[in-house]
Each structure stands twice: as C-alpha cells, then as structure tokens.
Length: 359
Image (tube, rainbow, N blue to C red; front, side):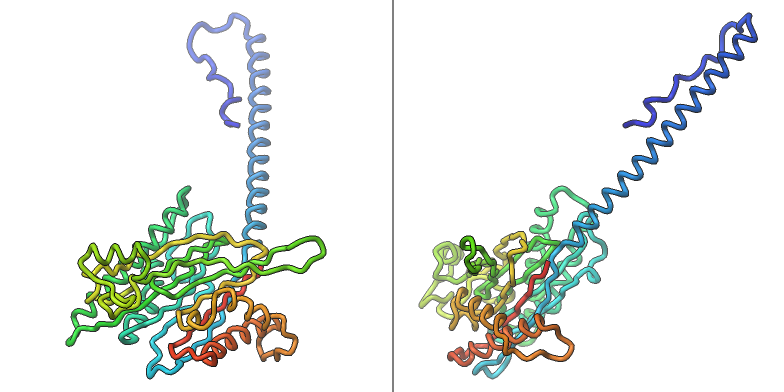
C-alpha cells in the first residue's frame, strides 16, 4: 500500500472567508480529527509493514541456516614420480577473500586440485593465484542473473590465470614449459559450479531410495568433462589450429587438450577455456570426490565412490583426536583411497580431495 494514498487533499487557503465563524470552527475541528485518524492509520500501516519485513527477514535467515556445510579432506601421494607436481586448495569459507557478497548469497566455498606436467610451477602458480583472481571478479552486487555472472566470472578467471602464468613463464631464461590441469569446485550457498581443464575429475555421490523398506543405493554423478586430444571436438580444434594428434597426444607429446600453461602448445589449439557444470545440492547428497587422473587410472568413478562409502560404514575406523566420529571416517576414507590407488600400481602422483556434505 502507498501510505500517501490516504492523505487528504491540500485545504483551500484563498478565496472568500466564511460568513459563519462558528460553523467554520466546527469544520476545522472535524478536519483536524480526520487528519489525526489518517496519521494514526498511516503509522499503524507503517508498523505492520516493518513487522512483515522482520518476519520475512526471519524466514530468509532460517533458509540461509539450512544451507549445506562442506568440509574438505585431502590425501596426496607421490607414487613413483621423482617430484610431486600436484597442488591443491581447500577454502571451506572463501568470504574472507571477497570484498563483498551479493545480497542473496551468504556463503562461498572453493576447492581445487591441479595436476602439473613438465614441472610443478604451473600447478603451484594456479593453486596460489586462481582463487584470488576469482575473488576479484566475483559478482559483488545483487542480481537476477547471478548464475550467468558466476559462470562469466569463472571463464574470465581461468583466462586471466593462464595469461598471467604464460607471461611469467615466457620471461624466464630459459622459458618455463610447465602446464597443469585444473578442476575447481565453487559452492555458492547450495549451488555447485565445477570448472575443469584436462583430465582431473569431480564426481558427486547421491543416495537414492530403491523402494519401500529397501536400503539406499548410491548414484555417481559426473561433475566434470575430460579434455584429451582423442575426443572428436578437441581433435578437430587442434587440427584446425595447425596441430596434429599422434598416439592420442598433441604433437605426440601432450596428453591433455586444455590446460593452464603449456605455452608451446597454445598455438596448436590447446586452450584454457574450462568446461562448466552446475548442480544444486540436495539432502540426499553425501560427498564430492575431486581427484587428479592418477586416481582414475586405477579406479572407475563408481568404484571410487563405493570404496569411500565402504570406509564410511566401517565401524573399526579409529577416532582421531580433535575429530568427530564422522570426520574421522571421512579422513580415513580419503587417505585409504589414495593409498589404494598407489597399491594398485598407479605410478603417477595421486591427489584426492573428499568433500563431506552436511545439511
């Protein structure tokens, strides 16, 4: 309601004066009483509006409190490599990095794994700088197109990080030739955005009821897309740029078709544009598994999810100091998964990030 709708019209201040002063005073008294009633009605209406706004604020607060909390666990194994070229980042609460948040957002989390090749400089650079570039570009004002803005922010962030690293790499003597995959999980309230380059992967474990009285079963959902030169679209882009694919590799050397760094291959069609996927979390979601290709060389995504679930249900897992029983299970599942990958013969570096989801 517009509070000004009920205000009286301005009184006539010009024209002839009434010939009946007594009647005029009565009219003025009635008019004053009417104005008083209008003011009281307006005050009551304003008070009611404030109460409604407070109630809406309480409702919004309850909704925000119902958001999922993600906690990260990490395990890294060098395998048979001489150098650990993987890097990772765990930021369960990224709000400290952001100058401001859109009004409709209350929490931002960020997790990432980077698998380096040709050295560890590209993966370490991405781990140190990508989330800072993301924080600078993250939308800071309320918008109806938040989803679109977040996606643009991720695309711009990957481009900026790649350009900055290539500039630094080319200035070295000799020039750095390092490259890195990147798989980043950005959680905005209950919405998960995954941006990835190369062959590191992210999968979600969602529990579903199979029928009345029956046990839940796990469903493995892919949150990322692999980029290698054997995929038709990737190979065509590389060939159009003048590159070749031999034995499943760019110029017979590089295993991935998208990456950060790899300056010598950028002119051959290797790009830094990530694949973007979005998924809204539900109360049926148990965890997100984020890992480099070292894990997936010896585990299928579904096998890895079932391996983690088996450890989470293992009653013999020892409780660690400072961890709850559930946290101890997630930590054990993450560590054992990486150890098992090496035991199965993975010679590559193995980095696993396990994100528990609690509503």
